[in-house]
Length: 281
Image 1 (cartoon, rainbow, N blue to C red):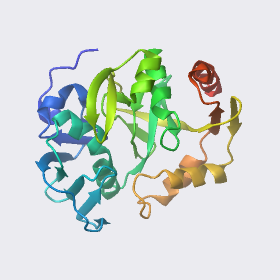
Image 2: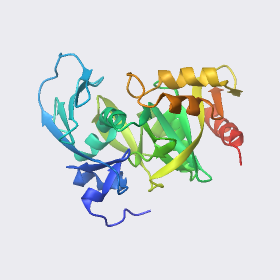
Image 3: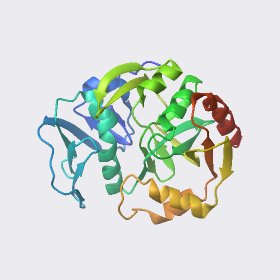
């Protein structure tokens, strides 16, 4: 689906109207009228060893790759200091995700290190550790024609899942196995292949949760609310007190499973069939 001819200030991701990234338009979605604005600014400079902090008006973060992010609430601006120049597309994905999580907390929204996909008008979250198969599962779902809500950060406005940037970023071995994606080179300290995504709905109601893990056999284990809540707390995008504790309890009461599969590409397609078979009609 082609990107509609919208003015740049009417585009965004994660429930934010984004400024300063016009060249990344193919990664953005139509912004809601009530989405707040955030300007993204890239600078080149050394990494900082100053401690991270988040207050009610300002945040300073350091990514795993050494990038420094300063977010100013009143100015609606996030400044990314990186060791080398970054494109607008790189700012939107992958660098935006932690900044979006902080801004979301200021707005009373929850966020999780997770992806999500759409089925029958609803969203389903995929949560798991790094290299647990989230992006490969999302890419395989996309190649089957399923809508992908987000890749690496799930932002919720209440129980509404807000669309992330329009790509799934893959490791080279995953791209080769799926026969999909375009090479980007090194972005965010690792080699990436990018699978472009069509436009989704800007938001979909979250209906359930699937936690991914590796196991000796393919199986799906229903999760009690207590285990689901523990998983949600573990994968929260910002490790500070929740802006909406009742929402976490509501999310923990949604249908949830732990989906385990053996390592190896032979188990991917069967795991998709099992996953899709879990979802209520």
